[in-house]
Image 1 (cartoon, helix red, strand yellow):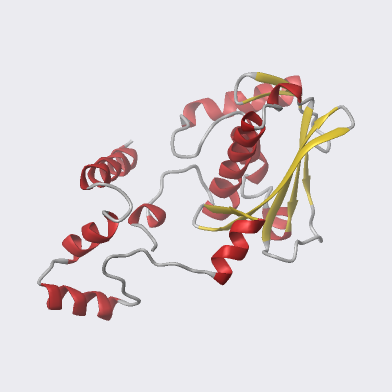
Image 2 (cartoon, rainbow, N blue to C red):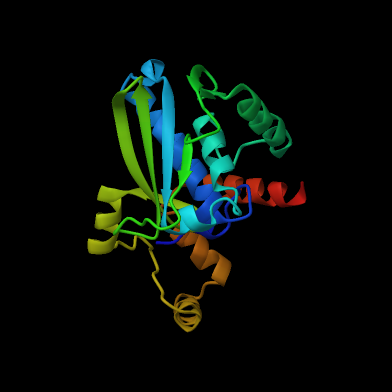
Length: 219
């Protein structure tokens, strides 16, 4: 099921696959470091961008998004007004606070590598994050930004391809099928979509999330 919140998401621009996705991946990587209780051992993090991310990532702000994600910011909650100052501080100091708490080196050269001619076989938008303690590799993780801000790792990508699932209460594959279902059930389009969304969370949560998106568009 593709939720309305997958289609209408809050995030920094200019690209969901090149900016929002990599920022989410970098944030998830820091969370994984914390879960494995090694984040306080990290001396520096290196990010390698492959395929389309490596070829056009500079123009799409992919590097900046990675820095923000490593710093503990998420695309749907970051205050846009702090971004320029935060990035300038990282560039000047050549240091980065992972999750805003753990001080690491972040040199201008080679902290983020844009591979213009290298790709990973599973998907065109690939990135690998590596955390080190000196020369020791503590953790390495590959993520794929598969579009729309969706991020998956290698195992998740295989599962998406092999076992796609639709959790909709009233699934449809086209506009005509949607209208046909509404006529059959006596629903308006909004009612049917709400029924589908309620498979993922409560009606109150759906309304709260919709209000959050509406508020973001007014700012």
